[in-house]
Length: 296
Image 1 (cartoon, rainbow, N blue to C red):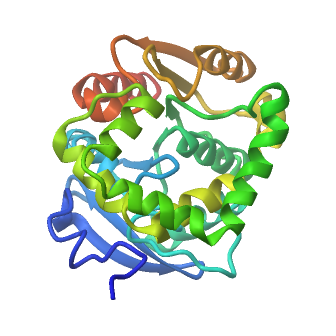
Image 2 (cartoon, helix red, strand yellow; image 1 turned 180 degrees about the horizontal axis):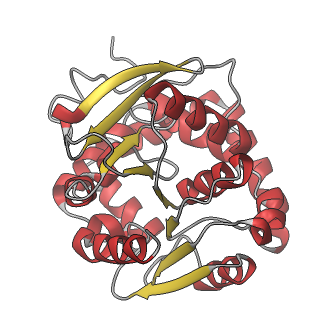
């Protein structure tokens, strides 16, 4: 019988940057992590944090480019990809950030640069705030503010309802197996047009109900009100990057978040969607490295 979760020997058989993968125990999880970079001791460490529903494949072309200058670490967040959930562990924003911190302690890795995509940017900022780090951070199409108006009340309840219904993730996983369905879903929900290889990796994940559960569970426990209140206390230099075709995060939300962070630059890239770093990794890495160099 097929597993509900992605299998490293099947779905991961030719996973991007597979040679850089390993599995590490920390905070009750068996994390799938990837690490690429200079072999020299003391190389600066760049931490990559993916968004809801993604995994390390999202950084497949970004990692090798950043690895020319950094010791790059990426992981599958709990319940995503090949990091299976732990029912005893909550996946709220503060708990997720704390789990990532414990993983970094296990790896004996102190990041000198953090790059987060979408919800990953929120995790990165929470790390900075909770640990009083002054590490530069780049947020790519960041999801940092609560949904406005009525959606702020309805979305968490909807996510909780979906999570408590075991059939939702099973139905979504079955739909994801249909020809062309994942491509349509990604284009509609992100505004991005990624290549066939990228779509295949998402299809492998979305066709597993366990991965879908992980994404829904994360959304069901996600609260951004406290993070919004604390944004004025971020002591690190921050750059937020918005793609003008992003259908998931409106430009107004990114601007409002940028206005709340004391030392924050705001950049806009054109012709790209929510998965801009997968569509044009070279352009995004160029922005990241220029920002990091300025704040080295």
